[in-house]
Image 1 (tube, each protein chain N blue to C red):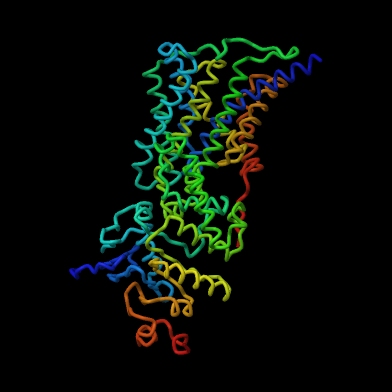
Image 2: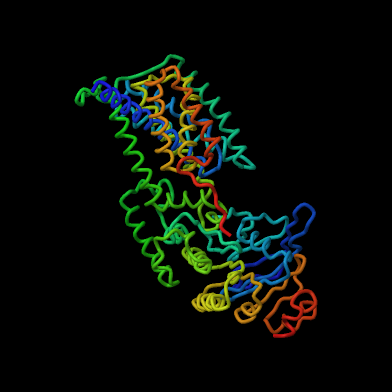
Length: 293
Length: 263
């Protein structure tokens, strides 16, 4: 009985962490789909989401409003980042954009440090720092918020990509830039939009996880790395893959910490990344490209 | 250069040149496409036909010369802006969105006709739903017209080759273009399907569509086209009706050879 309770405990925390990784991975995948590039600034937007929310909580006196305002604000940062660094590129191929995002991440980190400070910040969970007990299994209320909010965001994203004409245009541009432009899709603005969505997803992840982890200007790299590993695990560019990869990584970390040692938590993501690159580079849900003759 | 514009010219190409790394793919080419006509561009491989199409559609930048559509210069506009003006095309090597459904392919083709296609448009949420339905209905009507309605929800990549060619045509028409650029619409199709494609193009033209066509199937070119432009090494060697072109000595030697003699 004792073990079952412990396992359920680990399971719930793994799902909570996994949901956050899924959001970060989704950001990676959206930009990868539209540009073919790895966006190294993704993790910085996670940090911004948490730190800006912390800053705004004083002003708005409502956590909900502060989160929404911070996420929108960071979304705008994502749009601006694309317009200032990617859009002016003469030759916007994937490698060049990837290199540009490395610069973007360094600049973002420095700006966050200068404007918002070096001190880690945090705030109470959305229902306070309470824990709910389900037959002996105690779950942080914030973990439930994380799962619910992530789920809602994924539903909205799915509807956007599948049901709206703009979402379809984005998918079309991701599949074949030339053909999309020929039928009138402004491919440049789909890249802009993908950076906006990636920043939204990252900021949301940061805003909901900060009550559990605190946010600090220098965490961007590790968030980015976890999100990247999750994206690779699920299959780069696949939106369902982001969810599967994020959850799988979150659970692996939680159970790894439980059975081995929490010292190995971050090493697990490295191990997963290497393993997936060796064994199945296209990811769990990715398909090897089959050329039809 | 200074010839007065005839009001019925939909497309005017003047002194168009395109060079890649020392190779002149299109060399000082001038021609016009009249509104309502079917014009074919023919010539041996490497004559510059594809480069010409890419320059008109906005995929390749001309080195020199101008392209006017409906009296206004378009040669500096980005691809999507030309689509907005009313130029649509199909590709020699099918470029459909294989992972998306047949219906979605046509809806993306139609997305120019929508108002809620921008970020700001998304904010008017109630109209998004209504417009989505209107677009879906219009796309569905096109699929019905081309006999693809039964496959509407299948992934486009699962269609047979001939159906994919028809789908690409339907996607191009979805934006309600005024000029249709067709890059080898009959290539790879068996006889019967090629004939059906020719019939479809003729019907579209009868309804007023202006068509510029690159095609190797001479039977199709000769039977469909009002006017034929023959290119060789990026230059015009002849232009005129099927009868004119068929008799042109330079065409006979440069390109058509036996095929023309037989016809």
